[in-house]
Image (tube, rainbow, N blue to C red):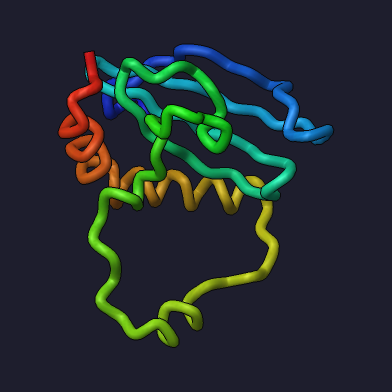
Length: 125
């Protein structure tokens, strides 16, 4: 999917330290922004983030520049009461494969809005 959106592999870090736990992250670059897909042992999650091209290839949760952002951060919040939002959250543990499918769905749903938000920051080169 990332290749279809114009991204190419930029870098792989398959052994960064999360306070004694191993993590891995893959960075992709397009003509105007970056995406990282990561597996965090500490957070027990697989997820993705987006940044302008100027962002260093650093695990987004450790990025002190705040250039790496979750895709959903650029999308309007659902117009639902808090109780409904809480009910919609699943606390069931998921396999890496299930989480990667959710990352793909997130990219499909929110890529354009997130890309527009990243480009508005003015940091893409």
